[in-house]
Length: 163
Image (cartoon, rainbow, N blue to C red; front, side, top):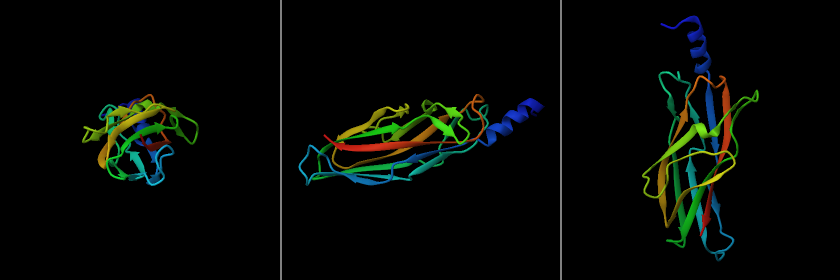
């Protein structure tokens, strides 16, 4: 049973919804490599959300779906790097802010793609390898009563480069 204050806090948390807009699939060419060398990165889905949850019952909330990432090069076996970058913190339409560092991810398999925590304005190495590789990234939100209820968004950019 919830007390009046506790119920209010629960209802406020129940409307928290966050979305991350991920860079859509793209084909990139490296500047330093010969023109016929290319790298392709496919990402699906391009948007994820975190369902509303009571922080006492779910201190860590999983996104609605994993993000599948696939990297291929032409010619095959070229060395590449993928970075992930949060362009800023999570922001609501009313200007409320939740630190982007409350969002982490786990890669599966994680022999090539690394687990990590987002950092505002910083490009983090997600993977370095050669040839075709793919993984699923599961994103997680560190839930807290400290955050004002609302919808928060941020753009996350994946960048693929030939090395």
